[in-house]
Length: 469
Ligand SMILES: Cc1ncc(COP(=O)(O)O)c(C=O)c1O
Image (cartoon, rainbow, N blue to C red):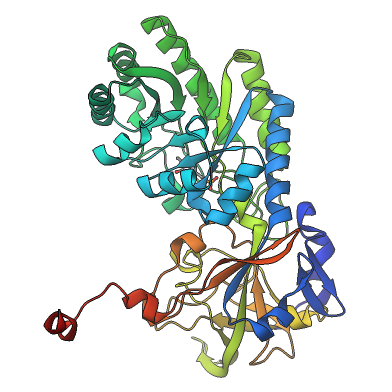
């Protein structure tokens, strides 16, 4: 089962360009932001997340500058659902971009991190009156309205407060995208106003008192590896916009095309991706296609973007320890028996939910042996009781190829876990939730403490408590 060393060796120099100096292998030890990851694991309970502030700044600057080079009137609203840790948000704000939130809780966090109302866009398909009330005191940059029902609700709350609500309507343009079904948000998905109803909905928004119609929004999904669906959506949106403006005598300020830009979870990129783990387009690929088309059609229109994964994804690694090992014999249909080597790490889908919910592939490296060739096939399990708590294999395989000597006590680092991991951690199986650290210019900072079973039950009650109360 051994593979060609050259083919499978995780070549650090081959990792995505922007990661080069953050992620290094020195004398057989993996460093992230200069930190010896396995060394840190010797003094810090595993699993834990390690973020790089440099990488956050870099991703934001690259994204903003790349899009602005093609369409100068571009504003980037970081999709905070990807990682809404307060330290992370503060870093995003300092880098000079704006923020997208998806609930009253995220809105609260955005404000706590210092974002001003004019920097905030608010999505969501079931906003409560209470959430809308908060978003209008004072009014944020845009409430992104998901239905005609919600439009009336926003108008109602704004009237009660005596304010004008700045509103963009989210439209489902019915554009298909090749990504995991759970990440599709257009064509048959629940989000947005149906494109067939959109003209009338914009007409209503233009007339309702206390509503200031400022934009159109759509978001076709997450981890979209090709530019074509964006171009298809943009053409549809521009033509709809034209009809809306002509029919209702309005002029919209902005077009919000959502987020979804893919990151390469596999080392390789491809012209024609086989899976949504390969990202064939550099950001320039997306920006050139979208920006140039918009420049031609509507240079006056502000382009709003809501990237989450493309900003947060590669900013963190998950550091776990191999806690157990075993060999299992697997019988094949032809009667042959194969030996499978398993290692069990101390992070499961309670720590990185998407490894199980979307069968996401996170590259992994044995941090204390990063110089050794990854030639021995292993299956990597997490510690949870579920059969599904098993990490996806390397491309085209059930197995992860790791150095031959990999054993209990080694430190396994999973890459690209910065997006949608801290957000989705759970207390499942009574396991601690991982702490998070960030490498900053002023040193290593703890940005989220580990949470233990005592923390989780702090608000629970049982009979003995009730008797004592
Ligand atoms: C409305 C909206 N905007 C932006 C995003 C961010 O997507 P991504 O993290 O793929 O960029 C999402 C996530 O699905 C979303 O629902």
